[in-house]
Length: 399
Ligand code: CTP
Image (cartoon, rainbow, N blue to C red; front, side):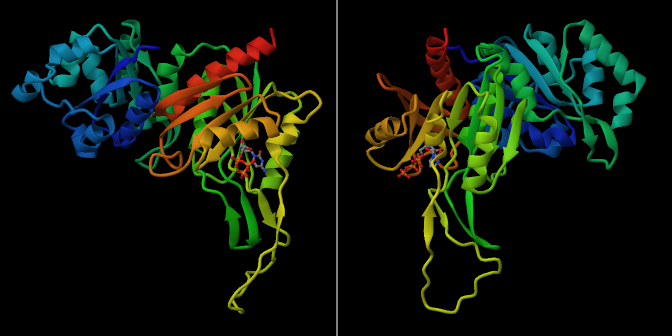
């Protein structure tokens, strides 16, 4: 078991503070224990209650707060932290750090802690380019502070340039991706994720429930393992993980074609997508009008993408996901045998604790000879453990 990294997230007063709860969540998804400290001006942009709800712990705000000091006092917090991440960090806060000020809780903690300090700046592009800011940054870098970003793009003030806070998933990957062994370096992984959409007419279709979160978490984790990833995704509203090549598809047939265009050199194929098993025989070019009291829709079976990959002459290591509502492990093992794949992940999609839309899940990994349950955790952490099992089997097959 990896020990959870103890990360203190410091939030200062910039508009990018709206991204900080997402950063906290993503650090926690990656197994970090997170505590939050907010400056007074950060509280003008976002409420401590939001951060308390996301982190699951009270937010620290004041240096001289008797109640907070009777809990985890500021010196204790400074010792607790293994890493302090200031995100967003304003130009003013960077200046305070460079001059060693300790006039509020966050600046005091930074001075009182031996933790690694990371700064994710966010400010207007002129403020970023200003020589004073640049000199302050140089001072911080000389003292061993790590700077992440800023990124380039549109800014809240309407200008375009360098100064946006780096996206939370990129910061989380940069901070916590190190703990992952790069055991899939050079290994090519093709993944399917999300649902498919089988059109009936221009406004209606048949689809499956799938948020795409598991497939995207797996792609993110595989990227941390060093793999080259092609993520073939049905329609979902998720950001593409760092370092992942994404191909968007709509129908099951599109997904089939995209998979077979990219599978030739793949070492591992993981089918996470909830593929529609059937599609309408005919797609109406115009919107179908309601005329009759009932109507019949004739459907035809779609090809099984996973099975078609496993049946290739020289197939990659092939992993499927079995979405089940009952007899989960039995049904999953039947699919393992019928589809002739190397591994299947049994996924309970029934009830509120089920996989749909949740950030957490529990799974059981089945191979011909083994059944390995993985307890409930974030989809990213599940992915890391699943990939560790895949790596050990894949290395065994490819010594
Ligand atoms: N799958 C696929 N192509 C299909 C149907 C499913 O590649 N046309 C893959 C899924 O991506 C998943 C696995 O097969 O990895 C199992 O999908 P699931 O929907 O659980 O099973 P089905 O084979 O569709 O069987 P059923 O719907 O009868 O449970």
